[in-house]
Length: 139
Image 1 (cartoon, rainbow, N blue to C red):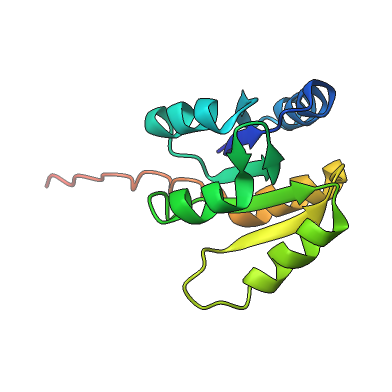
Image 2: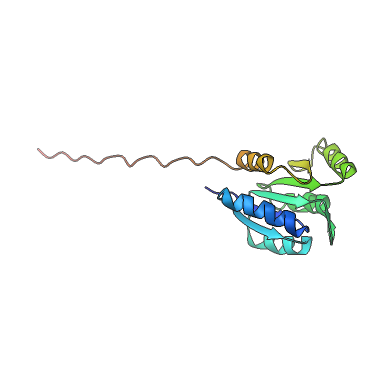
């Protein structure tokens, strides 16, 4: 089953690159430029994975993650930043027990790493068991 992925990135070129890659990997992807757009998207979909920039025009992706991860407990979160200090601070948060599961990566995120994270975050497809044959016996 394809993963449902929400991408929140204000850089148009990076957002398009991530979107194109994830669609080619057969994921269902919704992309947003702002946290306001992401708020609307989260009211409409239940993502398996959320990929978010930390520094966005209308707010902080890390705070958005902490707020919305509790409302979407099945979603896994990837926070991205080109700012090494923000990446370091984000990684320090991972040790706090009531924080949701998330990863913090340098931006631009290597697409293969992103793909591995999404594959690990989504359950594997379990094929349905073949139907049991029905045998009737008449004397």
